[in-house]
Image 1 (cartoon, rainbow, N blue to C red):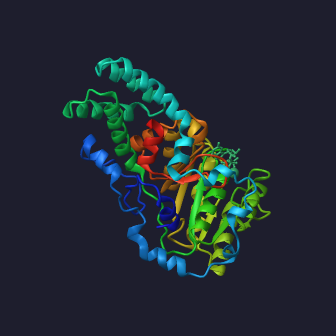
Image 2: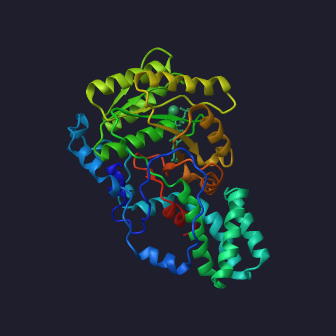
Image 3: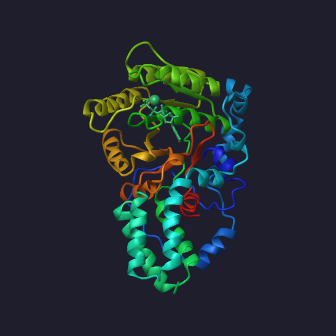
Length: 388
Ligand SMILES: Nc1nc2c(ncn2[C@@H]2O[C@H](COP(=O)(O)OP(=O)(O)OP(=O)(O)O)[C@@H](O)[C@H]2O)c(=O)[nH]1
Ligand SMILES: [Mg+2]
């Protein structure tokens, strides 16, 4: 497990995620119901952070000689690093990012709780509120059914307790996709980044590189977007900010660039290659097929690569994210997701829709354009950010 998980989780008193190996999407497992009392207890009990299980791997990674990244302070290299970045904690940053979503839900929820009895009308209005935040029909239904059941079981009449219970139920649903990225020992560990145009792939690669460098890994970036003019330059800016090598070519063949990058990383003993790709729409079949070809070429170098295939999603696209997951997953078998732009949308509920409808692990969330604005997804923090 990446060490930065440990760093980020340190000082965050509400962690409870368990370390799990990355795996293909699986059907949501049934979870036992938790009472409010259990939840209250949970919030004061410090749980083992997810990295603990893989401690030996971390130590091994730490003792490995690092390359030029040793010399740099990424923080110093970031031109736009804002003062506020270092003062906000992990949970606070997520909360700040999800402000619009929370406001949209909370305003309705507060008025519902303050004026209504907990009856069918209340549940109907709550369902509409969740759907408006893009939680989606299926997930909203599941949440409401569970809420009804447990309100009855636990004889809840008080609005504050109901909100607390709603948070627990949402957390349980989100835990289906709370599976942090685990670094296997393979070198180079190859991360292929795909997604629609403008989703935030390149920016996310810049932010992810920073997280990995902080973890003590060495990183090389492959400029696999050979399609868009200026794509290379944009990636190079992120490479410069992080002081890592960006490999690009004059040719228009993304497979060749990524293959070259893997070769170079192998020769230099670099831990991780992150490969950018051109944006493409699910409807552009030939471009989606091209991704499968890229994957095939990567496999010629290393049968086990890419070790992580990440789809970057823009939270503003709402329910269309489900469609994107389906199409990209069919073409390249996704192992993880990153949801970006959660800071700019009132539709952060889409993450719950994914947990219900297509539970591929959500590795990170993007809550801004700055280098430090990528966070490991935590179900509990996210639910807290949505509902407060
Ligand atoms: N507010 C906000 N903006 C973001 C976030 N991530 C990316 N962006 C912005 O989204 C825009 C597109 O980002 P890119 O990284 O170029 O997206 P891309 O997927 O690489 O785009 P193409 O290569 O054209 O397909 C840029 O203006 C980014 O600054 C985020 O988490 N929050
Ligand atoms: Mg790009």
